[in-house]
Figure 1: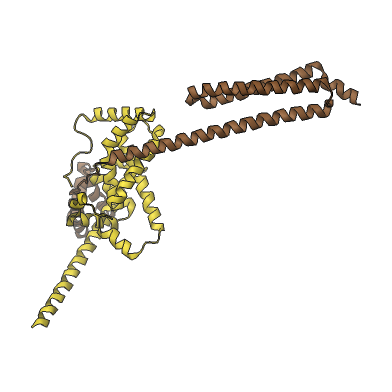
Figure 2: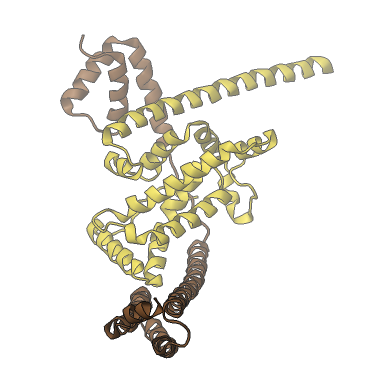
Length: 188
Length: 219
């Protein structure tokens, strides 16, 4: 008495796929010979296997490849459109961020230095010049970006970094002149 | 309908596989023609898997398109070290199981159930009429009675000629899980077949009685 019926049942299935070793096969056969229930199970399994072995393939419609490729192209177009929108949205965000930064610099300079201060007016001029430079740079970057579609993000980052450095330089010049400190002292 | 024949084109299996890998790599770099070649080579197995899983040619067509579209959007996740056939059949079988799950959530009228079960095609077209053989109807009806995860392994084993290892890869399980699932699937199919046989004999018995009544009535 080796095998239990549960295991025999599983082995019958494995035998149908030729997944048993010769020893396992012999063990199974010995069990089946002594077990009526498993003989019935083997008959059922043989019927199922024969029924399934007659599996036939059906032919897909001849237009299948064309239909799939049409959907692939439609998908590509949708994605390109989405990407274009995302790019536009990114530009809006970058411009808004730059404008906000410029406004903050200008307003805080006016509040601390006064509207007549030479530093404030020169800052105003600097920022106007910076914005002009920025828009020129942006246009240039757009040309570069469209040339290297894959590197759009890199180009955008580079542009923004350039702008940030330019704003930083203006600040540095202000601090170098000591403008902020002296006017604050004067104001008191 | 055609007799069964190997899924891969005739030729050195290894050459075929490396050719497919090359197509997949080219397709993932945006080569549309390479992708079209993969579709051409695999539409048959994918369509057959979907047809047996979902039960109708209409749904099978839609599922095949959806499978290849998914494959296209996920080409970057394809590992060229794996068989392309396993990868695409995995996407296809997951899609079918998902679709069946969604279908189960829907409220289906009795009429729809009957149509689903008995007609292999929602809208039979002339060129598909050859499918409507009695045997074909029976196969589809019995298969639909087996739970989807069992139907899946039976289709992969018998219609797609997959090894246990392939089935494990396609269904995201272990080989030992495939062994026991195939065993249970065969038992489930055996029960479905027996039930149908019992129904048929019952029907035949009733038919004889009705026939007998009619005869006795006419006398």
